[in-house]
Length: 339
Ligand code: NAD
Ligand code: DAU
Image (cartoon, rainbow, N blue to C red; front, side, top):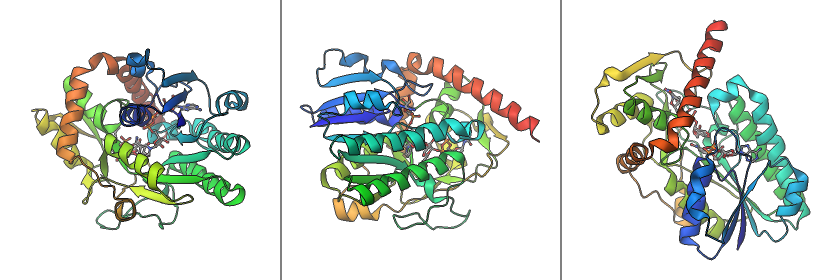
């Protein structure tokens, strides 16, 4: 099979390509990535001699480039996106361009080149927020109610994907996944930011009171879920993917990482809250019951692997950490200006 992966130099795309070429070694992958701040071009340095892997630097909005790449492709797995909620508060238009217009452009090109099978990677954030104290969970039938510019653009992209399936018969599937953690995540995100701050002897900034909750999934479990949907999912269907049976409050996750790294809770620093700060929990019964998928890592085992990876890959994250922390300084200045 010939696969186009978009955004394959980012966190989940990188893990997905590694996973896929290990488990399907005769398939061929073209990785189309714009190489934004979130990409790390060294992620496939070991693949120079792998003839089943090809990298193309480019934008999913570039129709002429898509016309060159798409002939012969059997499957598109679409990860490319602007993904950081805090950056979407700072610069929403970048999210509109890639997540909405880029997804539309890619869908249109997939249709033009023979209705190519299209799997769209989406997020649980499109469903909005679960009230603090509630044990409700999002599922495939939850109404869309996005809170941030990021989730609004992901919601829009989901609607376009479904519309291309219904209107033009494009063979689509969608997955809405909860928070991932694991190797290759940009240190702007909570888990790698915590780990790298602890390595550097820095404080961990906790937004608000740390009471917001998430449903954490180890990234390889997400990759296996995508494989399951590609291989056994029903065309036109949506599958929710999550990791925990119980949600985790941010403060509990922070304390768990501090403990695993043998540090003191004195490093916790409560800071101003994110505007429209959501809570998420996912019911993943459908993919489990219908397709037989379930997560293999526990939060504890996945966090240990993740910590070990960051401890042993400092050269991978050092530059992107500096860039991320510079962004946070700018964002805090911005917040102060608007108080
Ligand atoms: P990431 O930010 O780590 O990587 C995104 C990648 O997309 C980068 O390599 C970037 O260069 C590339 N990219 C951005 N704009 C592009 C464009 N216009 N053309 C081509 N490439 C472009 O993202 P991630 O965390 O790996 O997320 C991947 C996908 O999974 C996204 O669609 C995201 O919404 C979704 N998702 C992420 C999570 C999570 O916890 N990280 C959870 C659920 C869903
Ligand atoms: O739910 C899936 C989503 O998970 C994906 O769609 C997004 O692309 C991905 O970025 C992630 O979004 P979050 O906003 O949940 O991730 P983030 O790592 O930014 O924040 C996780 C939680 O931790 C959130 O409640 C905010 C909080 N936080 C974050 C940072 C960076 C802190 O308390 N301190 C921090 O320094």
